[in-house]
Amino acid sequence: MTDFQAVKAVTRSYMSAFDAAGTDDRLAVLLDHTSDTYQWRGLHPFHEQNSAEDTVDAFWRPLLTSFTALQRRETIFFAGLNDCDGFESTWTCSMGHFKALFDEDWLGIPATRKTVMIRYAEFHRIEENKIAETALFIDILDIIKQANLWPLPAMTAASFVHPGPLTNDGQLWDPHDPAEGQKTLAIINQMAQNISVANAILQGKLDAKPLTPKEELALTWHDDMAWYGPAGIGAVFTIDRYIEQHQQPFRTYLANRVFNGHVARIAEGNYGGFFGWPNLSVTPTGGYMGLPGSGRPADMRVVDVYRRDGDKLAENWVFIDMLHFLNQQGLDVLARLKEVPRT
Image (cartoon, rainbow, N blue to C red; front, side):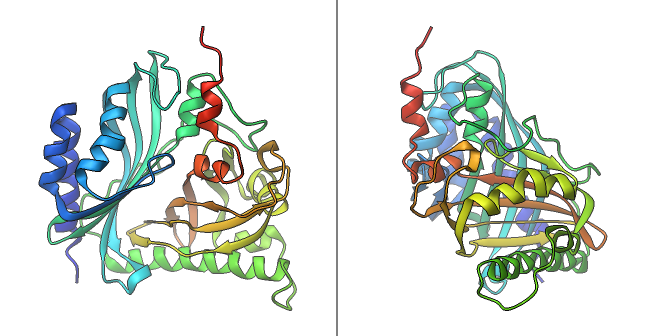
């Protein structure tokens, strides 16, 4: 059985050293904790970097220059074997916020000199006591919103600083019964299968009577589910409002939904999560987030982190590379920011 405690210790050691280091020392820390073939995935416009040096130059140094006094405010941490490769690789997942002072412009977003909360989810693949691969998702649209700018016509649900788990037990420092992680992974997979079947029925690929959206969700979700989506979509509470403010707009305005799979899908205890590159391909038909239809497929790179309560899911934190999704439709959000008058 994989020793998750040893794997988690690798990630904890890296995060402690990296978060405490000065901007000019971060590269040395990253090199010390990563493999020679280190691969990093991030959001648009960073995409993929193939070395620690490239990762620091492209992402970390500009970020740390613009966002000073940056602190990691972690709310969830767990590890698990990867369901996507036959449980061969081992990953950790950390989620929460980076709190910082927004002191210099970043990606064309004007600095506010105020406190900013940056949502993040970070996956690390651990191999031979080194970090071999990282996927780091942050909510760039939410940073834009905190700078009092908004590039989209509408947002389907609510916007606020997303809380951690209701139960305040998301950081899994100690060992957990493997059976509990297996339960969590099973319910996540069942939920994904339910969605795939429902989509196939709606698209006429299966000859079956569809469940109502509420019946479908109630199979794997508690009635008072909490769903924390990215800026542009927003957060919802309860199955009924999830249907009204996320599922219905998503299924109505995004056609030809194709599931592309995940890179990693793991669980430990009551927590689990996954990310894809990309997870989904969809064709916007017009109306989603108030935008016109593009008529061409666009990819969604997505992170989902879950908390299970008993035999159903209770909370879900979602990250989507919205800038990449919008850019594929012809909306370059970062270019649009450059056109905003500065006062």
